[in-house]
Image (cartoon, rainbow, N blue to C red; front, side, top):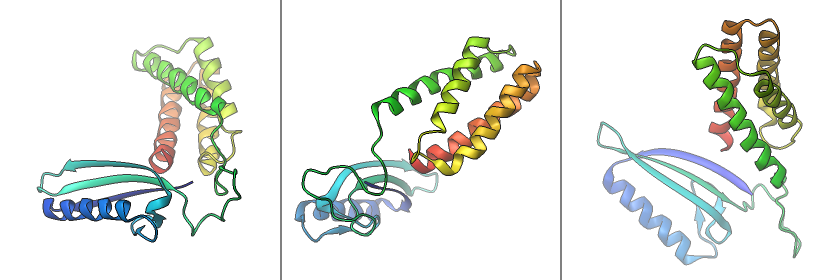
Length: 184
Protein backbone atom coordinates (compact mmCIF):
# COMPACT_ATOMS: atom_id res chain seq x y z
CA UNK A 1 0.00 0.00 0.00
CA UNK A 2 1.17 3.48 -0.76
CA UNK A 3 0.92 5.75 2.26
CA UNK A 4 0.95 9.52 2.01
CA UNK A 5 0.80 12.29 4.61
CA UNK A 6 -0.33 15.75 3.59
CA UNK A 7 -0.66 18.93 5.62
CA UNK A 8 -2.30 22.08 4.27
CA UNK A 9 -3.81 25.25 5.67
CA UNK A 10 -7.28 26.26 4.48
CA UNK A 11 -9.73 29.00 5.23
CA UNK A 12 -12.98 27.54 6.63
CA UNK A 13 -14.70 27.90 3.22
CA UNK A 14 -11.75 26.26 1.40
CA UNK A 15 -11.86 23.36 3.88
CA UNK A 16 -15.57 22.87 3.18
CA UNK A 17 -14.92 22.83 -0.59
CA UNK A 18 -12.07 20.36 -0.16
CA UNK A 19 -14.24 17.98 1.88
CA UNK A 20 -17.08 18.19 -0.67
CA UNK A 21 -14.64 17.37 -3.49
CA UNK A 22 -13.21 14.49 -1.47
CA UNK A 23 -16.72 13.10 -0.90
CA UNK A 24 -17.47 13.44 -4.64
CA UNK A 25 -14.24 11.62 -5.54
CA UNK A 26 -15.13 8.74 -3.23
CA UNK A 27 -18.73 8.63 -4.49
CA UNK A 28 -17.95 8.71 -8.23
CA UNK A 29 -15.62 5.72 -8.03
CA UNK A 30 -13.70 4.59 -11.10
CA UNK A 31 -11.50 7.24 -12.67
CA UNK A 32 -11.65 9.75 -9.83
CA UNK A 33 -8.26 10.35 -8.33
CA UNK A 34 -7.44 12.17 -5.11
CA UNK A 35 -4.90 14.53 -6.65
CA UNK A 36 -3.13 15.22 -3.34
CA UNK A 37 -1.95 11.62 -3.04
CA UNK A 38 -2.20 9.96 -6.44
CA UNK A 39 -4.49 7.20 -5.16
CA UNK A 40 -7.64 6.27 -7.04
CA UNK A 41 -10.80 6.66 -4.96
CA UNK A 42 -11.68 3.04 -5.70
CA UNK A 43 -8.30 1.90 -4.35
CA UNK A 44 -8.61 3.98 -1.19
CA UNK A 45 -8.00 1.75 1.83
CA UNK A 46 -7.73 4.12 4.77
CA UNK A 47 -8.16 7.86 5.27
CA UNK A 48 -7.57 9.81 8.47
CA UNK A 49 -8.41 13.51 8.59
CA UNK A 50 -7.60 15.94 11.38
CA UNK A 51 -8.36 19.64 11.57
CA UNK A 52 -6.84 22.12 13.99
CA UNK A 53 -7.82 25.77 14.12
CA UNK A 54 -4.75 27.98 13.88
CA UNK A 55 -4.53 31.29 15.80
CA UNK A 56 -4.87 33.02 12.41
CA UNK A 57 -8.34 31.49 11.98
CA UNK A 58 -7.20 29.10 9.25
CA UNK A 59 -7.74 25.39 9.59
CA UNK A 60 -4.67 23.17 9.47
CA UNK A 61 -5.74 20.01 7.69
CA UNK A 62 -3.65 16.90 8.17
CA UNK A 63 -4.60 13.74 6.42
CA UNK A 64 -3.07 10.33 6.01
CA UNK A 65 -4.10 8.23 3.04
CA UNK A 66 -3.26 4.66 2.23
CA UNK A 67 -4.28 2.69 -0.79
CA UNK A 68 -3.03 1.03 -3.94
CA UNK A 69 -1.30 3.61 -6.09
CA UNK A 70 -0.93 2.76 -9.78
CA UNK A 71 2.20 4.92 -10.00
CA UNK A 72 4.08 2.97 -7.33
CA UNK A 73 2.75 -0.57 -7.56
CA UNK A 74 2.37 -3.15 -10.25
CA UNK A 75 -1.01 -4.82 -10.71
CA UNK A 76 -1.51 -7.76 -8.38
CA UNK A 77 -2.58 -11.20 -9.44
CA UNK A 78 -5.96 -12.43 -8.14
CA UNK A 79 -5.73 -13.68 -4.57
CA UNK A 80 -2.47 -11.80 -3.95
CA UNK A 81 -3.14 -9.08 -1.39
CA UNK A 82 0.35 -8.10 -0.26
CA UNK A 83 1.68 -4.76 -1.48
CA UNK A 84 4.67 -4.88 -3.79
CA UNK A 85 6.16 -1.66 -2.45
CA UNK A 86 6.28 -2.57 1.25
CA UNK A 87 6.13 -5.88 3.09
CA UNK A 88 3.09 -6.55 5.28
CA UNK A 89 3.60 -5.97 8.99
CA UNK A 90 3.76 -9.31 10.75
CA UNK A 91 1.91 -9.69 14.05
CA UNK A 92 5.25 -10.13 15.82
CA UNK A 93 6.30 -6.65 14.64
CA UNK A 94 3.27 -5.08 16.32
CA UNK A 95 3.99 -6.98 19.52
CA UNK A 96 7.64 -5.95 19.37
CA UNK A 97 6.70 -2.29 18.93
CA UNK A 98 4.33 -2.49 21.89
CA UNK A 99 7.01 -4.06 24.13
CA UNK A 100 9.58 -1.54 22.97
CA UNK A 101 7.26 1.36 23.73
CA UNK A 102 6.70 0.02 27.26
CA UNK A 103 10.40 -0.47 27.97
CA UNK A 104 11.26 2.91 26.38
CA UNK A 105 8.73 4.61 28.65
CA UNK A 106 10.04 2.72 31.69
CA UNK A 107 13.61 3.87 30.94
CA UNK A 108 12.34 7.43 30.51
CA UNK A 109 10.49 7.36 33.84
CA UNK A 110 13.61 6.23 35.68
CA UNK A 111 15.69 8.95 34.06
CA UNK A 112 13.05 11.57 34.78
CA UNK A 113 13.17 10.58 38.46
CA UNK A 114 16.96 10.93 38.31
CA UNK A 115 17.46 7.22 38.94
CA UNK A 116 19.16 4.65 36.78
CA UNK A 117 16.63 2.34 35.11
CA UNK A 118 16.45 -1.21 36.48
CA UNK A 119 18.93 -3.56 34.74
CA UNK A 120 16.12 -5.86 33.55
CA UNK A 121 14.28 -2.89 31.99
CA UNK A 122 17.43 -1.82 30.15
CA UNK A 123 18.13 -5.41 29.06
CA UNK A 124 14.60 -5.72 27.62
CA UNK A 125 14.93 -2.34 25.89
CA UNK A 126 18.31 -3.21 24.36
CA UNK A 127 17.13 -6.65 23.18
CA UNK A 128 13.94 -5.27 21.62
CA UNK A 129 15.82 -2.39 20.00
CA UNK A 130 18.24 -4.84 18.41
CA UNK A 131 15.37 -6.98 17.14
CA UNK A 132 13.56 -3.91 15.78
CA UNK A 133 16.50 -2.84 13.63
CA UNK A 134 16.56 -6.29 12.00
CA UNK A 135 13.02 -5.75 10.63
CA UNK A 136 13.27 -4.68 6.97
CA UNK A 137 10.87 -2.18 5.47
CA UNK A 138 9.89 -0.23 8.58
CA UNK A 139 12.04 2.92 8.54
CA UNK A 140 15.35 1.32 7.59
CA UNK A 141 16.99 4.68 6.90
CA UNK A 142 16.64 5.56 10.61
CA UNK A 143 18.10 2.31 11.95
CA UNK A 144 21.76 3.35 11.87
CA UNK A 145 21.14 6.54 13.89
CA UNK A 146 18.90 4.64 16.31
CA UNK A 147 21.45 1.86 16.78
CA UNK A 148 24.14 4.46 17.46
CA UNK A 149 22.01 6.13 20.14
CA UNK A 150 21.17 2.77 21.74
CA UNK A 151 24.86 1.77 21.72
CA UNK A 152 25.60 5.05 23.49
CA UNK A 153 22.90 4.26 26.03
CA UNK A 154 24.37 0.81 26.63
CA UNK A 155 27.86 2.29 27.19
CA UNK A 156 26.49 5.01 29.49
CA UNK A 157 24.56 2.44 31.52
CA UNK A 158 27.63 0.23 31.78
CA UNK A 159 29.73 3.14 33.07
CA UNK A 160 26.82 4.29 35.32
CA UNK A 161 26.91 7.78 33.77
CA UNK A 162 23.32 8.97 34.29
CA UNK A 163 23.81 12.28 32.46
CA UNK A 164 25.23 10.55 29.37
CA UNK A 165 22.48 7.93 29.54
CA UNK A 166 19.87 10.70 29.62
CA UNK A 167 21.56 12.41 26.64
CA UNK A 168 21.69 9.21 24.56
CA UNK A 169 18.10 8.38 25.53
CA UNK A 170 17.00 11.80 24.25
CA UNK A 171 18.94 11.16 21.03
CA UNK A 172 17.15 7.82 20.55
CA UNK A 173 13.84 9.56 21.22
CA UNK A 174 14.55 12.18 18.54
CA UNK A 175 15.29 9.46 15.98
CA UNK A 176 12.10 7.60 16.89
CA UNK A 177 10.08 10.83 16.63
CA UNK A 178 11.50 11.59 13.17
CA UNK A 179 10.79 8.05 11.98
CA UNK A 180 7.24 8.08 13.33
CA UNK A 181 6.58 11.51 11.82
CA UNK A 182 7.38 10.07 8.44
CA UNK A 183 5.86 6.60 8.68
CA UNK A 184 3.27 6.45 11.42
